[in-house]
Image 1 (cartoon, each protein chain N blue to C red):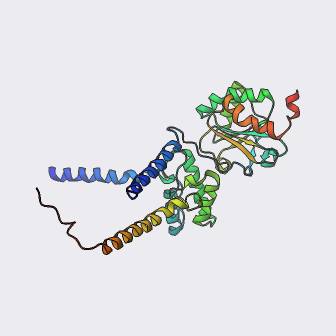
Image 2 (cartoon, chains in turn orange, red):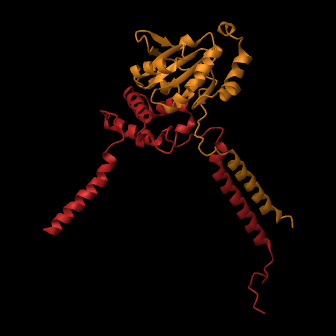
Length: 185
Length: 147
C-alpha cells in the first residue's frame, strides 16, 4: 500500500518541476537578456563628440551625478519611436542624457537632432562599435542609468517609454540622490 | 554529347551548392596562423549571436555579429587565450552568449542530475534484486493457464 505512493509522489514532483519551468519560461517574443553590467561599473570609454570631433568624452565624465546613457542610431526605427520620450525626460531636468551614436553616419545624426530636437547633453560617436560591445549592447536603442559613483543601476533594451522611465528608472534617482540643481530651475 | 552536357550541368549545379557556404557571411580577414584560424572558427561557432539568438556568430550576417567576429579576431592576434575571449564576452553579454554553458553554482544541479539519477537507479535495482533473491521459490511467476 505504502509502496504504491512512491510513483505517484515522483510523478507529482515531476509535474511541479515542469510547471515551474513553464511558468518561468521567457514569454514569447521577449528576447531580453539580463545585462551582466547591472550593479557593475560602467565600462571605460573615450569617444569623439559628434559636433566637436576633436573633443573626446571619457567615462569619467559620468561620475559625480546621475546620467542616462542612451545608445541610438539614425538607422534604428525604435530610436525614432523613443525620441519624444527622451525629449520629455530632458524637459523634466532630472538627469542629463548622454547619447552614444552607434555605427552611424555623423551627418545623418546631426540632421536627425536638428530636425527632431536634441535631448542629449552630449552625443559621442561609436563608428566601429567597439564601445557598444563594451556596454554589451546588442540592439538599439538601449538605455543605461549610471549612478554618481559610475555604477550601472538600470538598463533598458528597446524604446524608452514614460511608464518604464517612471517605474524602473526614476525610483533610483529618488532613493539615492537629491534632485540635481538643474531640476529646481 | 547530350549526356556530357547534362553531366556538366549537374556538376555545375552541385558545385553551386558547395559554393553557397563559401559565399561567406564572415568577411573578417583570415588570421595569418592556421592554428589561430582554427581557434577563431571554433570560437565563432560556439558563441551565440545575441541579436539573432539561434545563430552562431560565424553564421550571422547582422552588423553586430561582424563587429564581434572582428573583436575576436583582434583578441586572438593580441595573443589572448580562448578562455580569456569567452570571459571577455560573458562579462559583457552574460552566459547566454555561450552555446555551451559553463558549470557554476546555479546550474550545478543540472549537471549533477544525470549522475544522481543513475545512482538512484542503481539503488532501486539493487533493492529489487535483493528482495527477489530472498523470496521463497514459488510458482507464482508462472503464467496462469487460461480458464
